[in-house]
Image (cartoon, rainbow, N blue to C red; front, side):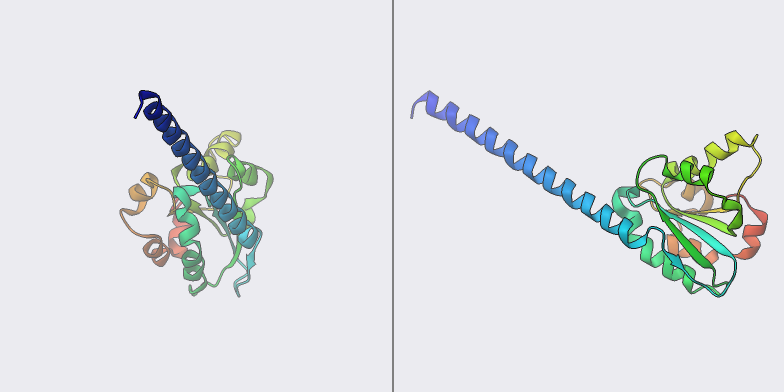
Length: 183
């Protein structure tokens, strides 16, 4: 076997490996985009009617935690629906960065009894920072319940320890909402 044959085989192997890797990455990216698009289409703007006139704004960040938020969304909604308060839940699904900031700046969120964010630490940061800057640090909207839907969830761990989203929702109470800004 000549050295040129070996070199051509190595080049062909590397080219094939690159093509396969590119195809696999694009295939994964296309699946991810479809999953995000489907989740958003199924849940964004959804109003889950409850008997209580008080409303909760449920902000879901589907890309948070590499999709973990999408995985636990249904469980979170079910847990909220089983509560005795029986709130009406309005769902907002983010589509890009700054969506949360734009939502709270453009929408009157004071009409909600509470805001629940299923996302990561940066989702909470985005929710809190912009309005506080605009209003000299005074609270402009109702208390916020943060559910761990991100990768590291440092804020949630600081607030709730290592409790799961179900445990946090199980301990969510109207008394805590009256006394807190971030639950």
